[in-house]
Length: 126
Image (cartoon, rainbow, N blue to C red; front, side, top):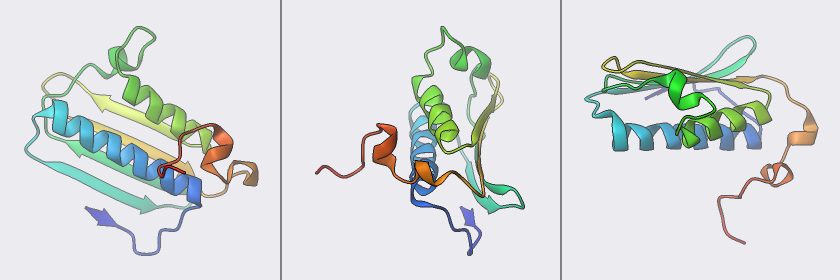
């Protein structure tokens, strides 16, 4: 895993990066049959991006992300990205590995500063 040393995110974006990474690595473990996984987190001029790629068995990304797909985790990751003003792209094909790319803009509305405000479940039980 490679991480820029001076990458700094607001708390909700940090949670988003963590949850997307967690979901992707879980999917690799459960489904991909991969020999290698690459994780990159970078800061660019417009914001931040996280890329998770594997050399596993792949899947039909369009079908999984579609209305009738069973990619609930993928759809949840996309929704989480959109809540912080970001995007999530999934590239995969059967037999060709997978890559998930999360982008988060550098500046966001302060009204989205806390995970609880979005109706998501906090990581720690109260």
